[in-house]
Image (cartoon, rainbow, N blue to C red; front, side, top):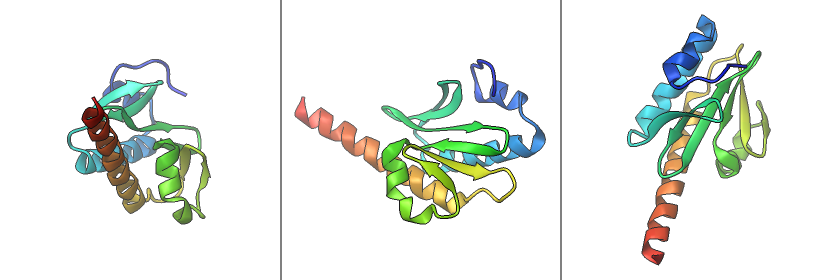
Length: 125
């Protein structure tokens, strides 16, 4: 949907107000739950990185795609009945409220997952 950008602000510049506000809300939730994570653009999408890509999210025509890796989706799979989802993605409708607590739960899980993985790799070396 959006051409190559180098920053979240550039990414937002291409979005209408409704989408922009939703993306900012998601960004703020992630920053609160993963304050050590670094914000970048990866695969053309806003991404948070913490020893590896933590989560991606992106604007589409009728939804916001949230990409917390397959493990992140699996972690909350029982809570996804009202969303379209796949192995590594969850779609949040542009016509319904953003599920803030669900995003928080996923991000907290991903932070613990990547930090534990990184700790285990360091112990093995």
